Image (cartoon, rainbow over all chains, first blue to last red; front, side, top):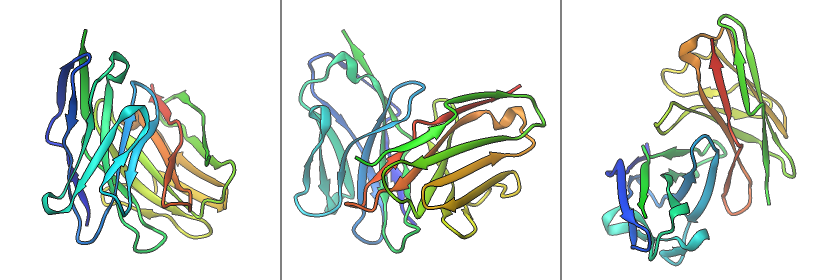
Length: 115
Length: 115
């Protein structure tokens, strides 16, 4: 079964600083990987996803993530954060064996931005 | 893009009553939908996988008699919380495979408060 670990519950960075949110996954085959962002009381917004091909994935809002198979990681990065980036970030892993493929979420990392 | 419409956005009900949450795929057919539950400041936990025309598959620990899932058409899945109790208060989110690029689209969520 697939699983996702986000080791950092909270991350605080200053506005304009770079950001890296960690994500490690466990799955027996090539996973499908996602990063979602959730603002308080809101639904989920997809930032980016990786299925195959180029291991460096570009997403919306200036985010990118790199799939590293050897490290079972899919870390999210942004070169310069904005105050509006403060939110909860979820890494998720999916698998497609049949139509009942599902995605499993990590516990999330709450990002705080210092002015 | 693919859109999943989830209603209601929020609902308050009395303990012992039942509440129905609907998820509709607006511009695509969703043979499979997923229902998640999210407690405050926690991650999304998969409750069940809903397949059109067949019984839902529930995750371990989820009471199938309490959380009734119906997926009667290719565009509609419903989650009914029966005999709701305050501990059922949570944020419920549905998701569907878009069938294109193996993407997943999420509804905007339903905040259920049982008083």
